[in-house]
Amino acid sequence: MPPVPDAPAPAATDPAIAALPPEPLIDDNPQRLMGIGPGALGAILGTPELVRREAPAEIWQYRNSNCVLDVFLYDTAGRREVTYIEARDGAAQRIEARACLNELLRARLDRPLS
Image (cartoon, rainbow, N blue to C red):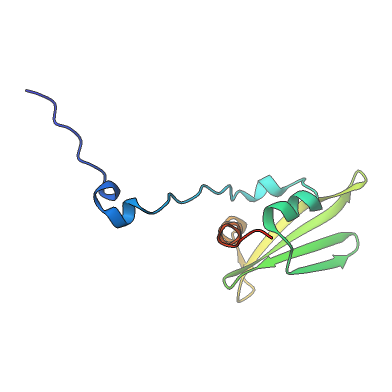
C-alpha cells in the first residue's frame, strides 16, 4: 500500500492566513539586558519614557497601556550597566518582567525607526 501524504497545514490552505508574514521571533528574556550599558539598552528598547536618578542608580522607565518596565543601571567597575529589572501593571502590582518586555519589544517592531 503506498504511503498517504500528510495533509497540508491549515495556514497553507487559507490564502488570507498564508499571506500574513510570520510573526518575528523576539528574545524577551530579561536576563539578556543584564550587564549592558545605556547605548545598548537604548538600541534595544529605544528612548525611555522617563529617566530617574536616585544615587547611585539611574532608572530608565518604559511603559505601554498594559505595563511599566523599570530598568536599573548602576556604576560597575567605572561604567553604568543594567543590574536589575522590575515590571508592574497599571495597578502598580508586580508582574513578570518577561511579559512586559515582550510587549515593549513587539511595539518597537510596529513603529518605524527614527
